[in-house]
Image (tube, rainbow, N blue to C red; front, side, top):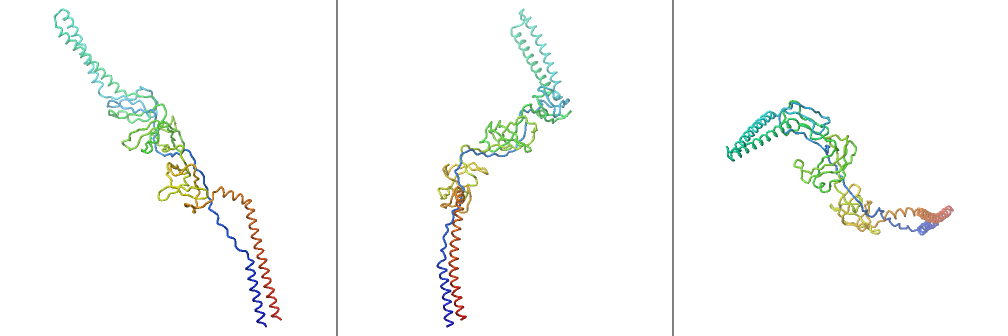
Length: 401
């Protein structure tokens, strides 16, 4: 009898478990959400790249004072910083040629006087028929030759005087003096440098890829000690400099006192520029095996498009081929981006978030429904558990009896 009661209790417990399983709600499959991406159309605009170069400040008008004859400096009348006027005497050089030029001129003058006296005598004799016409013409020729020799000697003398007194070719400031009193200077050596009273310019050198993209009139920025000075390209050489193997360029910066002559500055020049260019964020361009490509959104499907890039900066990249302005370019990164991938655009995601305000109410409702289902299950399970408990209690009672 006791075994029989135990069997009844066990059967009741099994029946309660079966009932609990039957009333438990089935798990609902929740669809996986699509990855969210940010996408937008490529924009049309201008893009440029500035290149930093090194330049040297020079006066826009500068003269190197060079003697035309060598000799000893017997007078030095200027020093660096002096203001001078055009034609002002700067240096006197004892060329050792003035005296000899003076002697040659005086000798030529005597020859002119002798030739003129001889010509006058021949003219008088020719009038009386005492000399032939040929003798008269010879005397005239000698007089002309003597005069030419004198004129030449006089010019040479004046030149030697001019060579001895070196004057300022322009008005301005004496920037440097490279000679001293009693120095012997050679013909063609630089005695001093004078900067004109105009503005200043910056000389810099650029490679071939930049010289092709700049022109006279283009703007540049000159920087020194953190201060920027606007400038304009005034000159560019079309021939490579033999020393640097680069192209020489000059830009005017006005009369800026903060940029002394000879100082080194940074020059920023627009080396590349494109207008009406199709532009995308540089972060949206990826490289596969060296080939640039972008992810294009077509509805909710991702497509990979190879592209050709042009000018680029840290922020934007020019696309010259591969996409159009109508394509939506994915600008955010996801590890789930590949050809044919399904995604949702961020605007939809934001709408969903906004709707999940309504959505949040729906989410709460869903949660409430889940809670209700769970509660019902618990109640059912509790009921089944209660039945099992009652049966067990009954069995216990029976067993006790």
